[in-house]
Structures are given as C-alpha cells and as structure tokens.
Amino acid sequence: MTLESYSLRRYFIVILGFITSLAFLTNTRAQTSVSGLREGGFSYIALNEVARLEGFTTTENNTSLTIRSPDGVLVVFANSPDVLWQPSGGGQEGGDIGLSAPVLRRGATWYGPPDAVELLGLVAFETSLVLSNNTRVNVNYPAVTASALGVGRSELTELGNGVYGLSLFASGSAGSDTLSMLLADVGLLSLAFPERQREFDGVLGQFEDARPLFFSVTAVTSNTWTGDVTFQQQGRRFIAQPPYGLVVLSGDSRRVSPQEPVSGVILLPTSFNLRTPMSVSWSGVSASVQFRR
Image (cartoon, rainbow, N blue to C red; front, top):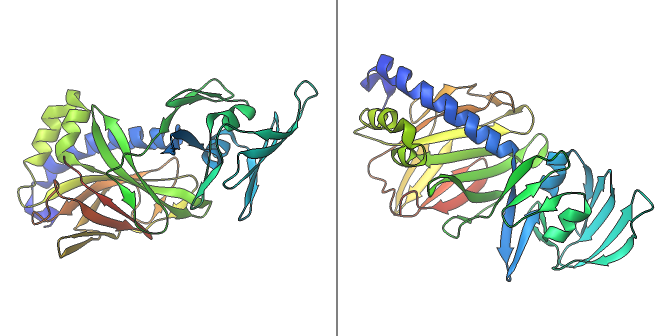
C-alpha cells in the first residue's frame, strides 16, 4: 500500500483540506479539555491537567501533589480525602479540609473530586469547567471500550455525533502526558462532520485495499515524536511506519509543537477488522480499541 497507487493530485487536494481543519480542531480540543474519571460512584477531574491549563506550578512525590495557584496552595494526598489548603488571602479559612471523595493517582495523573478544583478558583459542572479567565473547557470521561494495557494513558475522545477516536498520551520533554496521538476511522468522520460528507466519501474511494485511519499528533511543548504505530488483532501484526504505512500530510515527520501539530493517515491492511477489538501501541503506550461498533 503506497501513495503511488492513487491519484496523487486528487489525493492531496481532498485530503489536505479536511486533515488541516480536523488537525486544528483536535489540537484545539487537546488544549481546552481535561481528563475525567468515574470510579466508585464518584466523578473525578485530573488536577495536574487543570494546573497545566491555568499555568499553576506543581510539585509531587509518590504520595502527594502540591498545586500553587493565585488563590492559595493546595496539597492533596493519594487515596485520601483530606487535603491541606493555604489561602493567599485572609477572607477564607485554611488548614485541614475534607473533600467529598479521596484523591486518586492513576499513573502520572492525579484525580480529585470537583470540590478540589473549586478550591483553586474554578467552577466545576458535570462535564465541564470554567477556568479563572471564564473560558469553559470540557471534562472528558473515558468510555469503557478503551482500556490501557501499558505505560502511559489512553481514552476515547468524542469527535461529535457519537463518533469516537482513540487518544494515546505519552511522555514528552515537558513530562508525562504531554505528547498525544489521536486515531480515528476515516470512514466514520462523515458522521462526526456531516457538512463534509462528500469529501470524506471521495477520500474513502481512494483506499479500496486499505482501511484508512486519520491520525493527529499534538504536544504541550516542541518535541520529537515517533511515527511507528503497532496494530495487533487475532494473530495479525502490522507496524505503520512512514512514509508508506503512515503518511504525514501536515506538519513535520520528526517534530511536533503546539503551533504545528502533525496529521495524516495510517493505511491499515484490509485483513484488520475495525468492528473487532485490536491492540494499538505507540510511543510506549498501548490500548485496546474497537473503532466501529
């Protein structure tokens, strides 16, 4: 499967248009959303991601996370609802405070209940947050159909109208979960973006001997990235590598930054079934996903 087998002129005219717009969309979402977790009947929000969006400084060790915000200093402890709060002003009482649920640490991510986030000056709703600058961001709660199998983190990201992509979060130069890849079935993108259905249908017609997956790579800071993505399903194994199995259409094939995301297509062999769970590995992160229901 190589691009030489298709009409390059038509391919680039159609593909580059929607890839550019979708890469911009996913990069914007990556910058304006935080991860959520539902466990034990409670909803949790990723505290270190909130701090990163707000520009708060953090320090952590194996048992505690400290967040320094303009409103005060918050210290949370793994598996405990008790926190230390030191407000910066004199109008709020500090000291030991009990949260509505214990703080959880999952890998490199610290999850706290909504009242922990509100101590930092944010307003928490069921699926969104209002930041200190009045910007509203989404809280993305992962669906149960994608599960992490290795180092790093994975989750399903809703693209719209019930269409989901798989997001893999890896370590970058700025720390854990600062480098990400989004994978989505090109065949479902017309459902997520119905106004561009004609373009997507035209793209699919170019790939009769492949199952194309859209990919987008984003990063918190300028970083190198690897284009090797491994797929395994029922004894089959395929490694997508540039320039053929993985085709970069926008951005740099070696570096990524917040201002210059990378996007393109992965040409998955037709022997893979998108309606059957498969294992996906990239940059030390693995997940099991079913792209189509």
